[in-house]
Structures are given as C-alpha cells and as structure tokens.
Picture 1 (cartoon, rainbow, N blue to C red):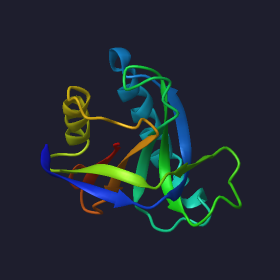
Picture 2: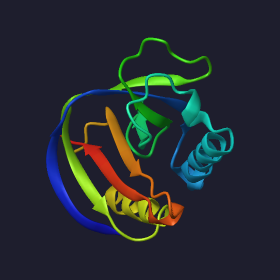
Picture 3: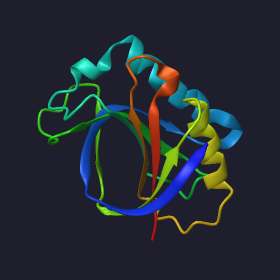
Picture 4: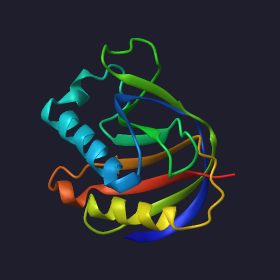
Length: 155
C-alpha cells in the first residue's frame, strides 16, 4: 500500500485527457474513474493527445464542490507542453504550483491506489482541495506492476 510519504514543492503543469464529474459516495468514483481508464485504453486516446511530454499518465482530481465527500472532477490523461491545440473532446486543466504530500505506493495496481485513498480520506490532513493527482508510470510488462504515486495538495 503506502511505502513512504514525503512533502514536496511541485511546479504547475498542464494536463489533457478525458473527464468525469463524480463523487466518492457509494463507490461511484471507482465506477466513473474505471470507465475513464477503460475508454482511454480501448480507444487508444493517448495517441490523440497533441504535445504530450511523455506517455506517463495522470489522474487529476479538481473542481471540488466541498471536500472529498462532495462532487469533484476527475481527468485522466497526460502532461502536455501547453494548452494550445486542444484536441476536440478532451478536457484540459492547469495543476497549480504548491505543496503536496507525496505517497509512494507499493503493491498491486490498481488496488494500491484505492486502498491508499481510503487511508487519506480517513485522515485529518489539512488539504487545499484545489488539485490532487495520481501519477502512473506504466510497466510495459505488466499493468498490475504500474508504478503509482499520489500527490495530495496541502496547506
């Protein structure tokens, strides 16, 4: 699950991908974000992202209505060099510069992501609720061995 945690100052970046408005209530976010993954992979959407910096993937959580208990937007995609040339049908977001708690995860992907978020939601961390994100460095040999980290925006 969580191998280690550290605080880190992160620079802003741009992300282009597909999005869903969701909530953590009744496991809805798992269904919606799972749907984003299915669509992203089956439609090979990574190849349609212009100006992507790499094939590393991110899922950004933003536009929080309140906190983790309310609706928010999840965007699954890749870092891009700018927000110029936005591909039709894609969502773009600027992830702000800030202080983040970085959770380095171990264990089988994607189970490790869900388990780590459960621990985060049960904690009393002073979060910003501006943007949080997961980082995924795919392992070409095995989807289950994808390297994953969570970046949690904090005050």
